Every structure is written in C-alpha cells, then in structure tokens.
Image 1 (cartoon, one colour):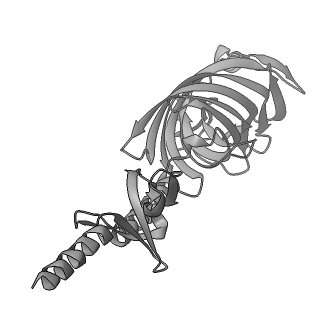
Image 2 (tube, rainbow, N blue to C red):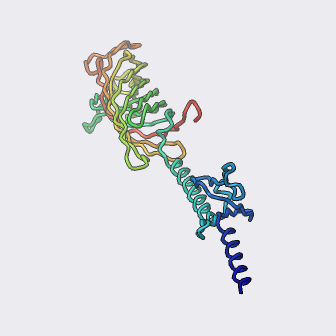
Image 3 (tube, rainbow, N blue to C red):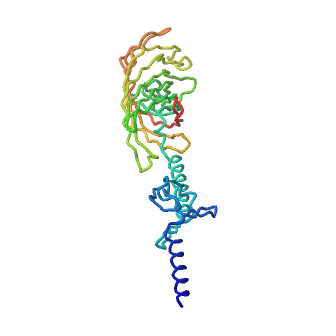
Length: 306
C-alpha cells in the first residue's frame, strides 16, 4: 500500500514538474520549454526552462503557432496572424484604391488645352440687308484655342498661365464680304480652389487675372459689295482683365476635364491701316468686353518624380 501511494505521489510530482513551465509551439511543430517573460506586438520573450537564470531569448510571433502556459491556458496565434495578414492586405488594397481615387492635386504641375466660344457686349454694324436687318461684328466675340500650364501651390490656391489665339467673325454671313478680328492672348490667372465631395473628384476654381492682347488685326474684305473696300487694320497691343469660374472633374488617371465661363474686358486702340483708317470712335477705340464658354482637358504631373 505504501508503495502504491509513493508511486502515485512520484507520478503526480513529475507531471506537475513537467507542466510547471510554458511551452512555445512553433509553426514547424517544434516545442520550446520556456518561461515567458514578455509578449509584445511582434515578439515573444522568454528564458529556457532548463536555464531560468540564463539569457532572455525572443521569437517573432509570426513563427509561433501556440503557447501553453503553466496554468493550463493557451494562446493560439495562427488565427491572429491570419487576421492580421488579412487586415494588412485589406489596408493595402484600400490604400491603393484611395490612391487611385485621389484627386490630382497631389501633382503640382499640369498642362492642358482649352477651346472656347463666346459673344461680345458691343456690336458694330458693317452691312445692311434689304429687309432692314444688318450684320455686325464685336471685338469682344471670341472663338479661342489656348494651351495652358498650371501650378497648384496647395489644395486651395492655383496659378495658371495660358497662351493662344482668339478671333471674332460677323454675326451674320454676307455673300462676297467678310470681317475677321484676330489677336493673340497671354493670360495669368491666380485662382481659389473649392473642393467638392469627400474625395475631391470635383472642384470649382474662382479666378481673376490679367490678359495681354497682341497682334490684334481686323481683316476687311468688303470690296465686292457696294461702297466696300479691302484692308488690314492693326491695333496696339494692350492689357485687359478677366474673371473666371471653372468646374473640374478629376479622374484617377491624372486627367482633369473642365468647363467654365470667363468674363473678359480690354480696350483696343487703332494703330495703322494699309489703305484706310476708321472714322468712328467705336472703331478707333473699340471695346473688347465679352464672355467665353470654355471646355478643356489637363494632364497632371510632377517635375520631380515622387
């Protein structure tokens, strides 16, 4: 009887000793008999059970399948790691999607092309018809084509440089007669940007800038109508101003589509003619005020690669 009791106690003590430590089970299937001292977000620190006063070791959580503690509880890391990996992958995917959906304002520079058509506020008659109607031309009419370079200092402030040409034609065509007012234009426009929507796919730009109009010339072809003549009237280069409201739609591919309205004003001054010169003030100092509806496309980039 004493032997049975002694044997039982020996077995219990041995089992107790065997489980009086922690066991780290690696994903490879290997067990480490240990005493856990600390568990961080990425590592498990421990001392070996056979040398508790020895050095402290560490192992990455990603290498561990499970820890069985001396009190019988367990920590299983495989599911945690899968969840972490899944979350990381999801975060990366979301980040990639967000980067793809980000507006182009992270690219400071842009180049583009705009076209426009509009009407002037002052019309000058040049031919009358038998029914009493007349054909007019306005120095403020503008069919335009312009190249654009822009720079965004931040998400709310932008500076645009445009160069291109504009021309005006009569309001009504006349057989064997024509007038065309051509000029080049250079514009500088600082603008305030108002983002629309959480991802800023759309924006409004409110601009006010200056224009320089050059090589302004009225080409006259009226010799085939009664009392008409042919000539080229040149006008001095001059400065004007404009106000603009532009709507932008940003795409994930760095392209932006825009549409807007520009109000512009400039006063021209007659310089010279080949065979003749104007006699009325509205032709000697014509007003070039008018409005233009614009449409365009831009491509955004950085001079220095991110």
